[in-house]
Amino acid sequence: MKTDFADLALDAVEKKNSVVVVGLDPVPERFPPVAQPTDATPKTVAASIAAFCCNIIEATLDSAIAVKPQIAFFERWGPPGLEALAEVVACAAAKALLVILDAKRGDIGSTAEAYAAAYLDPAGMGSHIHGITVNPYLGADSVEPFLRRARDDGKGVFLLVRTSNPSAAQVQDLCLGDGRPVYEAVAELVRDWSAQAVAPSGYSNVGAVVGATWPEQLRRVRSILPRHWFLLPGYGTQGAGPLDVVTGLDNNGFGLLVNASRSIIYAWEKQQESDPRGQGYASAARTAAEKMRRAIAEAASGTAPSTSGGKAAP
Image (cartoon, rainbow, N blue to C red; front, side, top):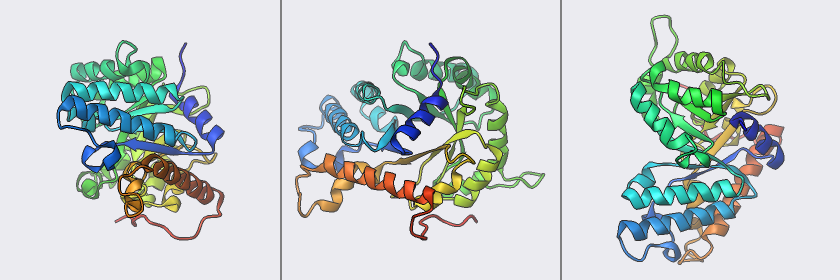
């Protein structure tokens, strides 16, 4: 039976009054001593990564609606790393969390088909993965295999539109001949490509990755994509705050999935003096995730302080 990502997201946001996505970017060198691998072999490191991530998932379950594993941090460790990824994905799905794989795949049609099959089809990890990030800069044929799964199977597809990294402007803010910046043209493509992937809720299964660090541009993309889910990186460590995030809410007060990675999974670092071995790393992550959930909810309701951590649009 088809279950649409867009409807799952809406249900999760409403049930938990949360938009928190926990980014899983596991760097063993930053693990607390209590979670460090006992040796540097890929198999041992991968096992430590899986254990660390599953503990973070369990700790943040009350506040988070989704997790976003970044595939590079798993691929780094070869086949054992991919086995760890599969374990982490299954762990999150078993807790009824949405799983969005941050893979940013983008290649010619036949290769894109293989990528889409690998991560979205039931024969692979796709039985536990609800959505994936995709790079649209090779055009329609490179995204069609993913779009087809959004239409036919209800999978979530998040296309890069305006990313949070500082040098994104070098390409994404370039002006076209008609005066539009590139990111607006891409947003319009997302609108066109997503027209046949609308879920019963009225939201599309095809969404956009838009950096929370650029609230004015986030607002502009929302005007182009009024009934789409946005995956927002940039919260916390990269500088975006709650008031930056809520500029992207749609007219119904929904449409956002806000990712924070380092500020949650490494929150233990702020208490190293009192907890040098990091025994409370999971508890620190739980506190950070709930603090984020509350801050964004307050900003959305208009009760947040009037400070903003993001950057003005250039």
